[in-house]
Image (cartoon, rainbow, N blue to C red):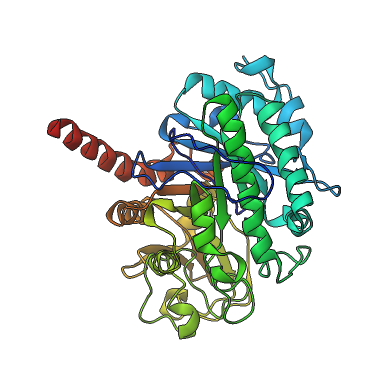
Length: 427
């Protein structure tokens, strides 16, 4: 994910599995149909929103973004001041009187004992050194060991696992991120090393540590013909991680030929995007692709963006939908869309995409975004397809009433409660 586009994960306790060290094969827990994942990323750079404000009672997991990779190939704090130094007002419940966001996360866990937290490593702007650390068995071992020491041993009890957000192996990443063919295989080996060392630590501590990975969805990331399989061996990843956070958003960007939806649930018949991209550039098609390439539904967590995309200089034809545009404009948060764009625009709905859009006829601005209606549709899809759950980038981008989070979480939690009631009745 970019600085604006990251990822999350979450999970209940799983059966403990032993593992070795080094680059030997390591197995993840078996796929499970347990409690749904409702995970949210929280970014360390948001000065206007603190970890204590996270509505943790509705979440299973909080993923803290981001940890960094040093030039020496070791894990490091992404922002030491925000992470562990800043002295927030009020009580700081948690282990060892921690300050900064780590202290506030510890306080959340104290108030919500069922909440799990993960540290996310990388991100769009922080993936440039993954290729280096994944290149050899020795570099993988040293890097993973440093991550476990820093985040699981030096801050005991704070994090329940690690999320890898390498954007992206082989191609499709930022200009500063290496694009090497060997990275696809090495990325799998890096995850296996994490799984192995996390399992070994779990054996010693009689618990299970989570391992998740944020993987791509859209087809505009790399050259023509790019797919998620270009960057990742999906079947191998699924066998290693607890689940995959699929970034089913940002399906439209500067490479898109026309205005389009950020995260359409299904394809629109009138979309003029070339068929080779259009047929896969929607949530349902991405899920189908992952399943066809060896990822079980119970390992798929759908990503959801709490921000939108604006397109400038869009002709006033069909209310701006599927029209040429000059450039991408700002990426406003949901509250900014409601306050700054909705009052001057007309709102429309595409029944195939199950997505809204706004068009300002005066400024010729097109806005693609999520609202409670579109997120309820996605959550219902997750339930119907028996997927693992949902992920959010990023929790501070919701409104004060948590409209988007509630729209995502309610269908999943309602379905889980109904399932649990049926199971109790059968006993």
